[in-house]
Image 1 (cartoon, rainbow, N blue to C red):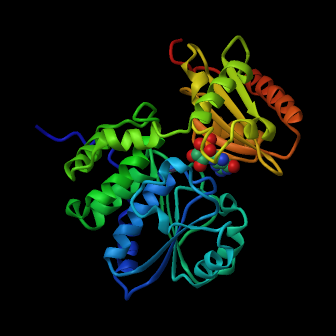
Image 2: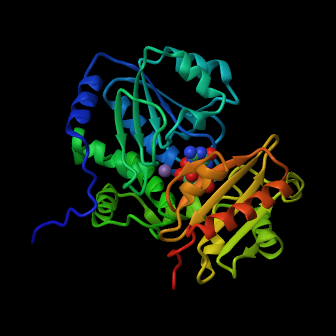
Image 3: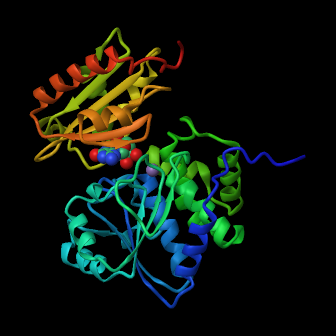
Length: 356
Ligand code: 5GP
Ligand code: MN
């Protein structure tokens, strides 16, 4: 029977040739960048790509603006990730001296915060984008921008197959790619779940990765305080609007301290309101020192990328996006409520729920 290639990523031939030529040069100093608050896909896709580039003989450093969540601590060679906030001089020197800079899993230098300035200072590096977010904001010398991909990890998988071949998928690379695919698809439950993605997973499984262990390492490794915080947020802080079709939650710094909050503890909270039937959009407001970080999720045609761009200086994907607010928590929530009204009045909440 013919293989069903539905959902296979169609990579641009010219861009592939350019990347191949670039990587076949003498050993290069390569920096891979991940976005602020790096998640499973940012870290997984970058680690996998780093392993591959090192095998080609290049010197590779992976830099993230701040630390990855603790439930990724076990990932192969994650200890080598350089955290800009912890080692600013080293991170900036490497960024400034790099011959090639890969931007992995983000669509704009603005998502790098202070690290972005060091990147801007390096005007000679070849810049390559490997990403699946909508509307990249800067030009790149070589660009793989695939919003139709469920994760950047699936894009890296496709790149490895196209440029090198399936035999280059080592178990270590497969573990990293699996984590990216799993986390960005909500454990294979969101959109873009194509036959090609499951074929990719089959290829990863063939390397001998232990899928239940990978799953438990990411999703079942939280602290007891995080479990209590989750209960508190759902019980006390989840609010509904628009006849239970929009939900929002918030956490102040005082509340986070009360539950010994660690970076990553609120991961996934924003998805929970979507377990309510007919829910269309969910928002989470998380206080930081100087601003409030906003996470947005939606169903179907409700476009939170648009919502985040329009009201909260952010972006992302249609059903998962984020942004920022520099107002107080109360003012941010008031702004959100007004934005929801405006968005709904314009038809933005039409056609997006599980069950009618
Ligand atoms: P999360 O809510 O998991 O932090 O982010 C959801 C999605 O939106 C991710 O794909 C993330 O990269 C994107 N995102 C989060 N915050 C921002 C932001 O401030 N700007 C943009 N452009 N994208 C964001
Ligand atoms: Mn991603």
